[in-house]
Length: 154
Image (tube, rainbow, N blue to C red; front, side):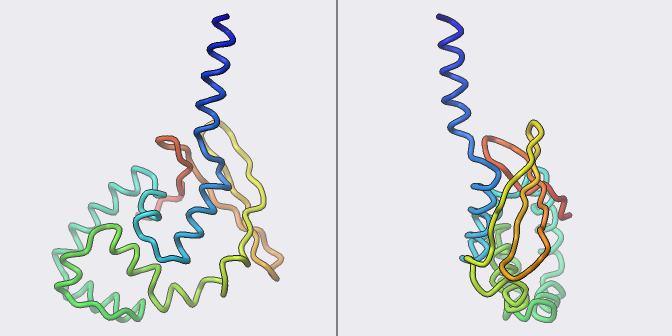
């Protein structure tokens, strides 16, 4: 009887954890919506902490940061806006920038999460883009019940 109860509990827990493909699809959808909050939550805890540190440094030189964002990403942002950005806002500014948009395929339906390989709490998701021969590999890690982007950005 105990084994059945434990097995039932494990099945419930497993059902509550999304698949790497499902979470990667959520991330891709968020990219196209310029949803910085969802992208922020898709970062590992370590990357979230690193981004917070970066934000402190950016606020120390808002004029330079605003100029750099205008130059590199073609966004119109003032130094006072830089000072008030949250981590999620900065992500939205970046992924909604003309530069970033020009790097995305024209439409979301051109991107397909095909499969994944999983080993414990790490996974690699395979992504293809319509009319491209390459398959892109993106590492993910399971943290707090969701699959997050495992690459270190900072």
